[in-house]
Length: 205
Image 1 (tube, rainbow, N blue to C red):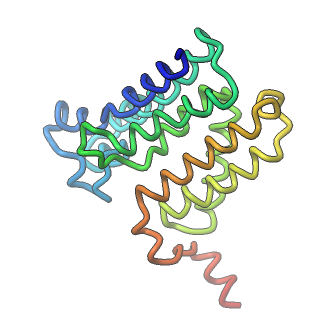
Image 2 (tube, rainbow, N blue to C red; image 1 turned 180 degrees about the vertical axis):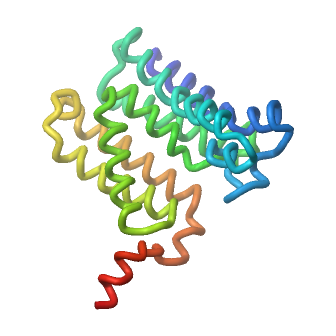
Image 3 (cartoon, one colour; image 1 turned 120 degrees about the vertical axis):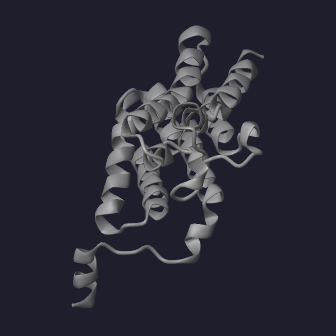
């Protein structure tokens, strides 16, 4: 019962479209009219404010961190129940009822979830994996999704004690996060990744 309450809290908190609200309140703009049309923090910057982008990104991240961290701290949630709590904020963000169930990819929220799960280890590893994919190609969606698959390999191999203890539940949580990324931006996969110039030169040789 306690775990269900935390799952519900994660869904509700994750569904709060902070970036859209920041755009409307402070910029008097609908950020979904910019860039890729997503309700995420990146479009706050595109709408005209990098400082507000930082605030929006932090809010989107911490709405993933808070329920995951507090569920462990206050209620001792662990294992498969913790994995369910970890998935909830990303589902809430991706399918927010405040936006007609058309949310964003949930990348920032996913980072926040893993901060709540593993401290800085998870977000750092995820950032390195996604960053590596951007060294190879330019497309944001392909980079994020392929980076998440690398992160899943990291979860299978890393000897961290906490991850070893709950490896299967955490791996399934990461796999679900990756699936949500794909579902929310499936149209981007109709074309192949765009290689970085240096890689194009290597492939042509």
